[in-house]
Image (cartoon, rainbow, N blue to C red; front, side, top):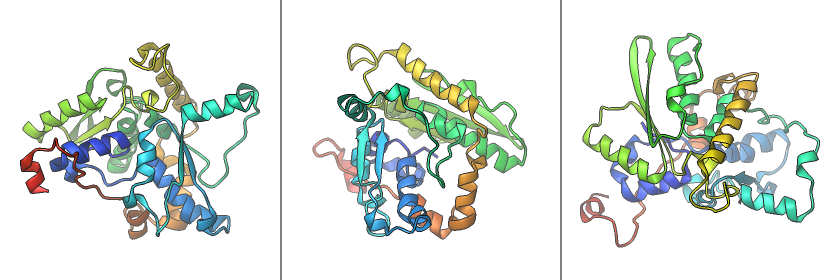
Amino acid sequence: MITSCSSAWMKYVEQFYPDLLDNVSTCKSPMSMLSSMIKTYFADKIKVDPKNIRSVAVMCCTAKKYEAERPELMVRGMKATDYVVTTREIAWMIKSSGIDFVNIKGENFDRPLGLSSGAGTLFGVSGGVMEAALRTAYELYTAETLIDIELESLRGFQSIKEGKIVMDGKEIRVAVAHGLGNASTILDIVRKDPDRYHFIEIMGCPGGCIGGGGQPYAGSNSMPLDEELLKKRAESLYSIDRQRTFRRSHANPDIQRLYREFLGRPLSPLSHELLHTHYKLHEPKGIISSDIKAKY
C-alpha cells in the first residue's frame, strides 16, 4: 500500500504511474477529511446549514488549491474545502495587516475536532505519516503498547528511508520517499520487485510538508531549500509530538467521540462515504506512453 495524503504526489501517480493506483490508499488527505467533517458532523453540532459554511484551509502546499477543486472530493453535492490559503500567503496577510502575531495570546481551538495528537503533528515531515500509521497499526493489530514510538529509521532527509517493525511475529517492511524524483525511483523499484515493501509513504515535496511549495522561503532563495532550516522545522514538529498528552492518532478523544457519535467505526459505510475517495488516470497530454494510454 502507498499513502495518499500528498496532493502533488497524487497528481503525479495519476499521470505517470496509473498502473499502481490500485495500490494507493483510498483515504482522503487530512485537509479533505476535516473539511468533510466540517460540512457534516460539525455543521450538525453547531446547528448550521452546511451550505452556509465556508471552509478555509491554511496549507503549506500550493497543490492543495488543486485538491480543493477535485470533484471526487465533494461532499453531498458541496465543495468540502471552499478556499485554500498557503502559509506564505497567510504570513503576508498577517504582516500587511500590522498584526503582531508573535505576541498574540494563544487560545484553544473550537471543540469538537479541536484536539490533535502528536502523531497528527508528524504528518508535516517526511516519514511522519508512516510513523503515525505504525504507532496505531501496531497497537490495534497486537493489542499491545508500542514502547519505542519514535521510529528513528524513518526520520531524516535521506532520499529513500527503509524500516522494519515486527507485529505479532510478522515482519512489516516499510519505505519512505520525499520529492517526486525519489518517488519515481522507489516506484520503479516496486514495479520490478512488488514484494519488497508492505507499506510506502511518498511526499511530493523535499522533507515533506515542511518544504511545501506554499511555505515561507527556507533561506535567501526559494530554491534550493536550505536543509538546515528544514531540519529546524522538522525538529519543531518532533518537539510538539513529544509534548502532546496523547501521541497516537487513535488515542485522540475528539476522534474517539467522532466515531462514537457519528461515523460508527472505521470503514463503516458512512466512514467510506466521507473519508475515502478514488483516483484515476489523468493524462498529461503529449507525454504519456501509448501502452498505458491503451490500458486506461
